[in-house]
Image (cartoon, one colour):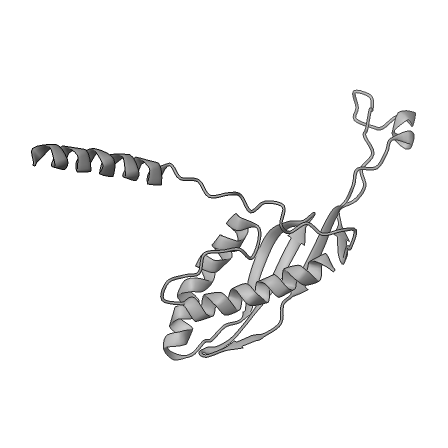
Length: 160
């Protein structure tokens, strides 16, 4: 019997070590969008090969402009679910999700309290995953699902 206990302990330790080192596949690149630009920010800048005083010389007139940052903000549809309505607005800069705002979530009673607790968690999940493929929050499954569906629709609009 002691042999079985030692083997079971060793196998459990190996399994725990494997679980701790488990890495999920990256979700990067799922939010790329084409040439669509809603708002362009930034100014083209010429490379200044200037003198010691910092003023550009004649070379700067022929320098190629740097690309501008393409910013797009898209609002997802309002998703009605059992406890209320969820609607998300997402901002992308050059295909990277930089901001997610919940425009609508339940705000009264127990559902409102849950929404206040999970909204920052969901935002953090989206910014980390850079897609709508996020973990749903336990205890707020319906809210998380509606948030995710509105977000996915907004990202789909950004692709169109």
